[in-house]
Length: 455
View 1 (cartoon, rainbow, N blue to C red):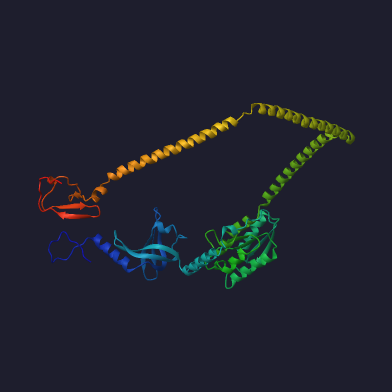
View 2: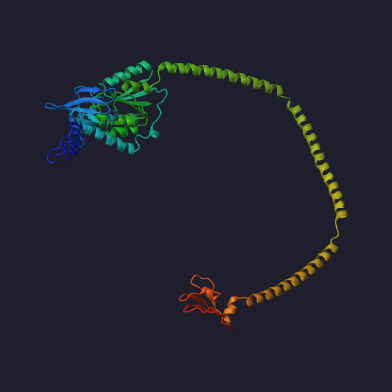
């Protein structure tokens, strides 16, 4: 590495560099030598600055290193590390030039040991999303007033007690059907899927809750299973997923029709409180009573109107017969009067037309004579114009330069294309162009004779 020393002019002296330049060179050397690398360790001295940057020490049993995670990267972390947390960070090895401290710049952070699980979670999520299991149009609305709620969880789980407590508090009239299953451990995913399939097949409930309490990603891993996702998506009744705490997300959450933050929240979403239900029923009773009173009143008024208009059938028939006769007479008069008037007007107009019809015989004879005279005049003028045109053509032919050239004359032009008319336009050893009757020629002038030559 070469450094420019502007203060030392001795050619043999070693270069002198500043501390800043040294630290910058070391930082570049470290960044080139160590690309982005995953590093595991324990978090110590964690500090979150007001700027949003994270500062902490990453250590193991034998060593430690300072670490910084800037706000632009920290905002994408799914948890905030605490003292003593085992983590894995993806970092760039560098040097903080202001203090000369060696440190790592953290790009991403995850809990230790969950990297492979998280990657498997992401792969499965992308696969099922591409298959359409998470599509919004597949989501079903929850029933307003379910009578029976199904619960898929472990009978020993605290989540079951939370769900039952919430349901009893909000809607004690609702029946609960438990579909027991282990919620973690070897083979738990298949048993969870089987319990969901059983609930769908039996159709004992209007809505199904799939739940368990919080835990680590390993504890919740049974709900990140493809078989469970398809069982939830294919269930015949709407499914509420209440797995883990508010910050926990599983594949089951994405496949379910509704995700709840906790099992208690899932129970609250599944049923409408009894008080709300009774209040709605009381309001419906009041509305129905009002509607019935209004319908009865309107029917009574309608009946009174019909009774006032009701007549004796015989009188009604006589009244309709008289009305029919009046209409028949009016129709007969209405047809005869316009027909007679139209006939009278037709006769009158026919007489007026006969009186005013002109005699066009004489006009036709005069028109035929004018046509004959016009045709004769046009033919005579056309002949005169043709004779005049032939005479003009003959004169034009006499003036045609081509005829002059055919009699042995030539048109002489210089090398600029100007017509030569006098010897003064000629120069010795110049070139002239001759245009003849047929073709042309180019000649060189040897000498010029200014005297006139007679013919």
